[in-house]
Amino acid sequence: MRTIQSLKLAVVAFVLICGISRAASIQIDLTSPLVAGTPGSQITFNGTLMNTTLDTLFLNSAGVNLAGAFDASDLDVTPFLINAPLTLAAGDSMSAIDMFTITIPIGLAPGSYGGEFTVLGGADGSAQDILGTVDFTVEVQSGTAIPEPSTWLLCLGGLMAIARARSAWKRSQ
Image 1 (cartoon, one colour):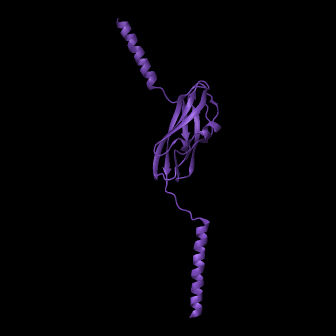
Image 2 (cartoon, rainbow, N blue to C red; image 1 turned 120 degrees about the horizontal axis):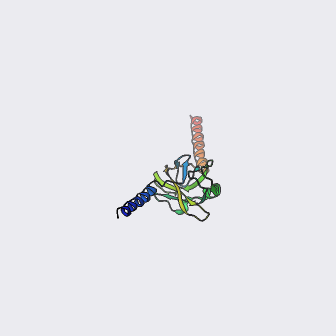
Image 3 (tube, rainbow, N blue to C red; image 1 turned 90 degrees about the vertical axis):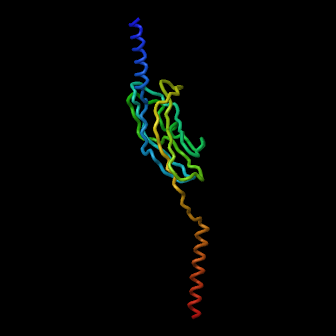
């Protein structure tokens, strides 16, 4: 009876240790985890991936979660799908690539918005296990107004009118 209890305890300990020591299979390093932009602009995050396992991993998909008034159409992982290799061999890493883009919605309040980028894949081309995640921040800055060409022409016309009026006033004196 005591042997069965010891065996059960050993199995439970093994399961717990395996669960606790489970680490990410892919290390994701963003070149800059904070990127700034203004409402209406598109920003791109780029970085590298490294396989930290002893097995070749298929990189099948990616996802972005972002807090705030962003919706799915503002988040695009197409750069990852185009630029990342289909597989990453054991211990291999890759050079920096564009990972994902975010379009900052017009009217979004300035501030910091935190998010998470996730790479999915696994032992074969259909696996959707979470291989790695990395946190990032979108810093939304207030937009600065840039005058349109017609505004410049209107200002220039006004300055010319003032100069002409001043010249006429000087001649009359």
